[in-house]
Amino acid sequence: MTTISQETSSDLLLNEINNILKEYSDDETLGWALACAWTALSYKADHLKILAPKAKSPTCDYIVICTASNPSQAQAIADQICFLSRKTGKLDVKCEGKDYAHWILVDFEGISFHIFLPETRDIYKLEELFNQYPQVKIPEHYYTSTNSVPQIKTDPLNVKDWTGHF
Picture 1 (cartoon, one colour):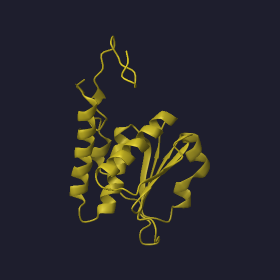
Picture 2 (picture 1 turned 180 degrees about the vertical axis):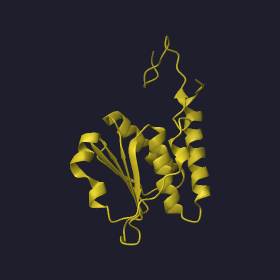
Picture 3 (picture 1 turned 120 degrees about the vertical axis):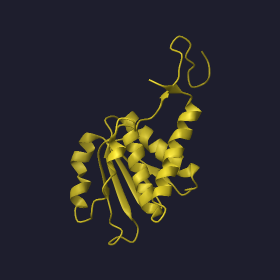
Picture 4 (picture 1 turned 135 degrees about the vertical axis):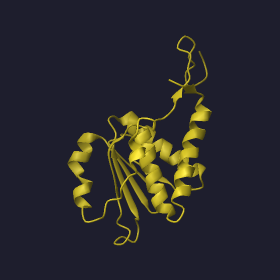
């Protein structure tokens, strides 16, 4: 397993997001929906769907829905989407529900990104609510095992806590 520094990890993620946005430069909002999907999958989210209500909704072009296995994973996905979107110039990013992380909504520029815990997703069933909208095909290579967050290098015998103290 290759290990890299945290700064390099963020740079690699940002680079991949920029590549996705370039590939879909003719529809930037679709590019961002797919970038959200790629990021969620890189954090091992499950049951990912992208719906496209843009023809029927004046406020939302794409709805991205995924399942995280625990609150920490859900929060990490939301944090990374917020960080990457702001880093690339999307300043009006709203994030709700991170405190409890059963259902986190990240909303920006035509995209509603829903991150659920399994039991919460089963209760609300957004896919059934929005089943009239077409589903966007997620590229198959987003699901490959090489799509993962790089491991952060740490020394297990000399690990600093978040404050920088030993």
